[in-house]
Image (cartoon, rainbow, N blue to C red; front, side, top):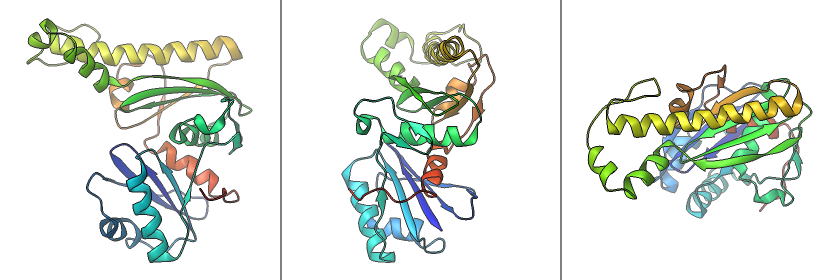
Length: 254
């Protein structure tokens, strides 16, 4: 059995993977998570794992918490995944593979395993990333833009008139709003959705096939409601990628 851990910017997600099945995942904020809290919350709420695979984009503090807790509690060395030239049937487009964010890399591996054919992988959080992968696993490269909240915060911070007019209001599901706050929020959501649709269109013209669109991330619902085409929401796509790697030989320790 393998314990899969995805440490994002604000939350940690985990699941125990055994027999090819990825059961219901758990999640918790990690800002105040200590070594003791991690042990009680994650390690001791289930059976001991033979392997622990970790995706970490939260920095060294949480990495050290996980590394130390797993070693002391289970006498197992946690495997911190890094982006490589090839893994899980994907060939990395980056000339320096390690420069690709590990969460993007694992999301692509998970998407490729979940769907047949080309996939367009979208992750929406603080930033929004879009990556294209062909049916045979070639990474086409990606796009990174501010996520909806960061886009809105930037507009409010760098304007005075708009910020003043956006003190109150509400949002709708459509594009056009009848108040400034709604106009900002709906504008951000639809701008990001339009970029996603553009990416799908570029892949369609390039590959002569329509890619499957997979959407993940903590703010994905903001973009999903503005999309004008079919998509599949996969909340724990990084964990699916880790599950694929759990069936492969361990990476060298870092």
